[in-house]
Amino acid sequence: MHMRQLGSTDLQVSAVGLGAMPLSLEGRPNRNTAIDVIHAALDAGITLIDTADVYCIDERDIGHNEALIAEALAAWPDGKDQIVVATKGGLVRPRGDWVPNGNPTHLRQACERSLKALGTDCITLYQLHAPDPNVPLEESVGALADLQQEGKIRHIGLSNVTIEQIELARQLVEVTSVQNRVNLFERHYFFTGVVDYCAEHRITLIAHSPMGGYHHHLRTRMEPALTEIARRHRCSTYQIALAWLLSLSPWIVPIPGATRILSAVSSAAAADLELDQQDTNRLHAAFPTERLLS
Ligand SMILES: NC(=O)c1ccc[n+]([C@@H]2O[C@H](COP(=O)([O-])OP(=O)(O)OC[C@H]3O[C@@H](n4cnc5c(N)ncnc54)[C@H](OP(=O)(O)O)[C@@H]3O)[C@@H](O)[C@H]2O)c1
Image (cartoon, rainbow, N blue to C red; front, side, top):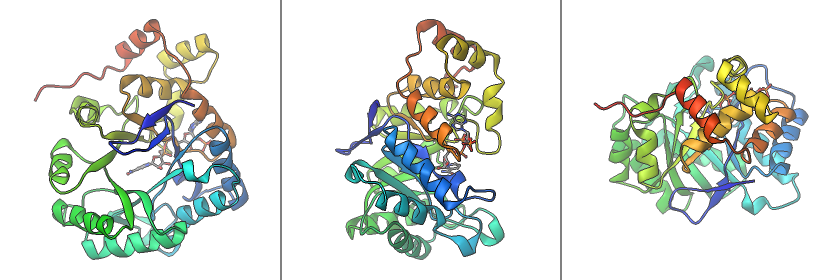
């Protein structure tokens, strides 16, 4: 498995991570199957698992995904120390909705609860899930800085942010990662320069929803450019979608979700796929990523 640097830290993570969210949402697989999916990802060489306190059905179920990962890791024999579990705080789930809450008091409570659910005394990568329009970003990031100083979190990440928001946060803390929605069909963060900015500043760009998102991933199967290249490489269109992302920057780490073992294993294998010039030209023509000048 190819590895990638995690920000400016001394840590490396697998070039493809596991997005654990679908294992805890409505329609989720049963617990044993979910744990089997996580184990299959780890066995295939994945060392980054992305989670959040709010990966669950609603407010009564907070921490479902984190507890699942803790259980899977406890039952996994080898190399637990190599695994980076990245969680997030800053959203709440009233009646199953997704609502920002970047209030420092909430972030502290959320972090304490995540520490318990994960069964650890320090979270390796803690990400602000999204800026809260009702709370100045400096206050939310300030809360994460305090948690870091207290040793409850080791590294800080942001999610769903613009360049301006990253720059504001970097005045207060070292930003290790930025987790934004980046895939073949949603290239906004290429056009606005966030992907380049992260590479220039040694920030890992964790690409969430890399297949188009949990509810829309089937479109990854239907793109002619993908089917053509996948046929040549004797692999799946999903694997080409990941190889495309990996080819665009050494700082991108996609975190595809999976509810089936097959998906997790196939995504892990995509980290070793090499696209040739013909492939990248074809993909570039179908899915351009040039930054748009503002
Ligand atoms: N920060 C944020 O705001 C935010 C928002 C959304 C998501 N995320 C994170 O990003 C992760 C990924 O996003 P996502 O799960 O919404 O969407 P996604 O990764 O774009 O798509 C997930 C779906 O694609 C299918 N899939 C994935 N890899 C496959 C493969 N190699 N072959 C065939 N099918 C494959 C899976 O199908 P099966 O279910 O059949 O296995 C899975 O349910 C989440 O799990 C979460 O950790 C973060």
